[in-house]
Image (cartoon, rainbow, N blue to C red; front, top):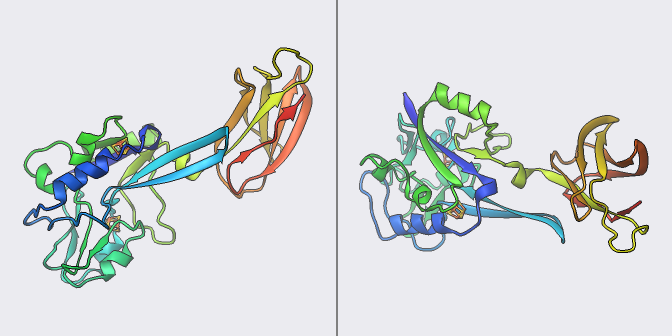
Length: 280
Ligand code: SF4
Ligand code: SF4
């Protein structure tokens, strides 16, 4: 059985909000009978763009996370709903029946991804439908995907086994749902830009008169005496080790020249860290 799969590349999102606006254009003031009633103009973000900043100026990284309904395989919203008000279609899309779901506010709080919104005037929960009304008319992409100018959003219609291979080949990841394993089916590329931390720094010297940047210096990263990564400084003397898990103890950064250790710094990471300039 083929299913719809949403793949999102965090590294390609520029926060232009085209996806958010396309969703509003499709769903505000438009009822889609059998699918959903219209989305209120304000207060609901079926395509919710979140932002994170890592590091500090000038070694700073800003990333955006497009977060629609995660179309979960073990969806808490389905479990909590009464009378079959929330259900998963055979093509993988999770739907809320607006008539059956009336008054069921528990569907909002059940979602670990905060993807369900309460429509106060209609007293119903609402969320992204992956534009199921268009998919059922033969569209290959929902409106948000069609509107994305950078290719950050993609949908693909594949058998589970073929999609599993793609996930492994491309190291795709899902969002975590804490103690609630909802089994989200929206997959992300470059999620480390949102979830992980980095150690960055600059290497300078007082020996040179014209420039004090040190390009091409070898920098090594250790944890518990195990070499994790090696890099070299760029033309500005900057280096960066990215995609590191936070709070797993101390890292050691070593600057090497001709196999001699010129400097060594110990770092414990709760957030991304930009070291003070290392002088050699
Ligand atoms: S993200 Fe939330 S609303 Fe969407 S299927 Fe999962 S639990 Fe349900
Ligand atoms: S349209 Fe694409 S690039 Fe623009 S905010 Fe949405 S996901 Fe990001």
